[in-house]
Amino acid sequence: MKDVIKAPIITEKSANISADGKKVVLKVAKDANKVQIRQAVEKAFDVKVTNVNTVSVRAKKKRVGRYEGKTKAYKKAIVTLAEGSKLDLS
Image 1 (tube, rainbow, N blue to C red):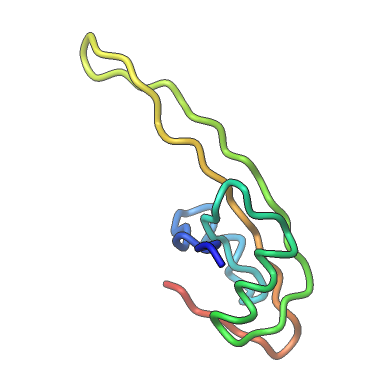
Image 2: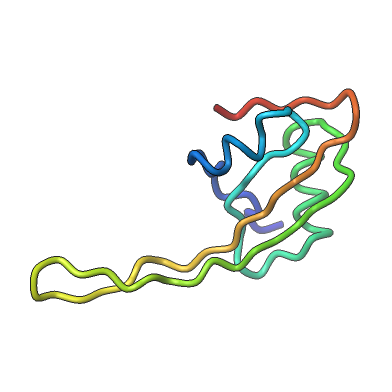
């Protein structure tokens, strides 16, 4: 099976989302669906997942001097854990 989970997303916004300990924000493979993400998280971290929400984050235009480019596009998953399950990625 391909690598579904790429990395945790640790930003101020994701810290606010996961402050209660029930949700975790992860960067996932672009072609992964919600079922694959659920199975990968449950297998990798040995927790029970109740819900998975996904967001496709588009590339943003950036400039450095006269040069233009784009940031990379990626897929973000907000995973809700079941009661009693806990996952600390920070």
